Picture 1 (tube, rainbow, N blue to C red):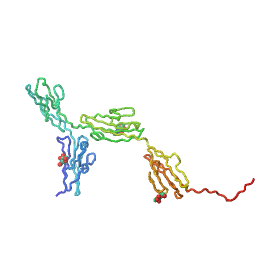
Picture 2: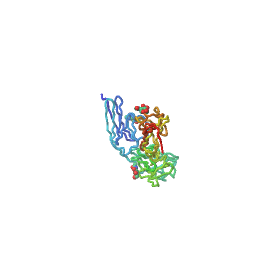
Picture 3: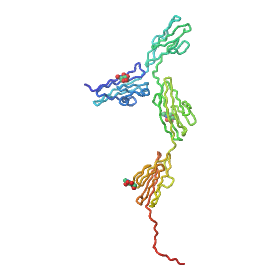
Picture 4: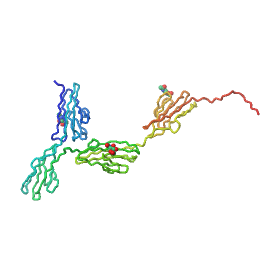
Length: 397
Ligand SMILES: *[C@@H]1O[C@H](CO)[C@@H](O)[C@H](O)[C@H]1NC(C)=O
Ligand SMILES: *[C@@H]1O[C@H](CO)[C@@H](O)[C@H](O)[C@H]1NC(C)=O
Ligand SMILES: *[C@@H]1O[C@H](CO)[C@@H](O)[C@H](O)[C@H]1NC(C)=O
């Protein structure tokens, strides 16, 4: 009894969405992982539901089947299926070649059909190809015939029915078979459909919003700004420029450039869009102090509190931390016995100071750009003392 067995087979015929099945049997149920030609690993344990299925290029079902959506030439390569459970593991490699198969119309190139006036004519057109071609009919007046109307009907097998034939219906009808071999709807940055991203730019600098589009026939690509302006590819504006590769470049960005930028890509097979939320941050500045970084203060034991300030400037506003002489840190709003680090202004208050409070107090001011430090050295104050002998002085002149 083999605890484990895998068979893989690849299905493409007659399907727009090829599937690679990896039937792994085992007890307990094996976990199936697929390795794609580009090295990406997809696991069935992580992707058991089918939500968002339509937006993903690759989907793996609970049973291990890998669904390849919208396969194109770039999806060719080796697909490896790994299955494992507690008892063992197994793997199978499947080489996938994508060979588009242009449509072929069976039957000879022209045929003559004779009908009675008032009757109906059936013109058949059978085509083979992979994916299955779609049949389109062109009328003698060079119009594309719609699937169903008072006059015409196109059956599922491609047969054109001309109803209640009159003399004016006489002429040449052309059958066109077309499939999407090698065609692909647009992908933006590797994604199909609608996607969203966020970009943080720094003011007065250059921001680059990427919109890399793939698709066949080559999609039309354009950007729409938050103010509703449409910018084609390529586009050369003042501060705004759209490069040939689809990237939108904004030079010297400012706060007013913030908003939603949309990149759209469209061909006859579909449309994809990318929404970029642009945030503009003002330039960050490291905290700094205007006054000397170290000050020496006496401790006056008159019952009045000592307030140590931490007047640092910076962009964005710095956050403060006080470090007491013994290394204890006080974050904003924290109070430790007689020591309070006030919220908001960065002040450290020492209530009813005593001589033993002496030492070096450090305020650390920090923001994204860096850190600065201010120190206060508190020295135990002494009562004023007059040197010299006491006694009486006689002053004579
Ligand atoms: C696996 O599941 C998918 C989706 O439910 C199904 O289409 C496919 O046929 C299954 N494959 C096998 C081998 O059972
Ligand atoms: C697109 O082109 C611009 C200008 O040549 C370049 O700076 C940018 O890096 C390119 N973007 C991508 C995604 O290749
Ligand atoms: C540090 O000093 C503070 C204030 O005097 C005191 O509350 C705290 O317990 C001291 N911490 C340590 C670790 O000595």
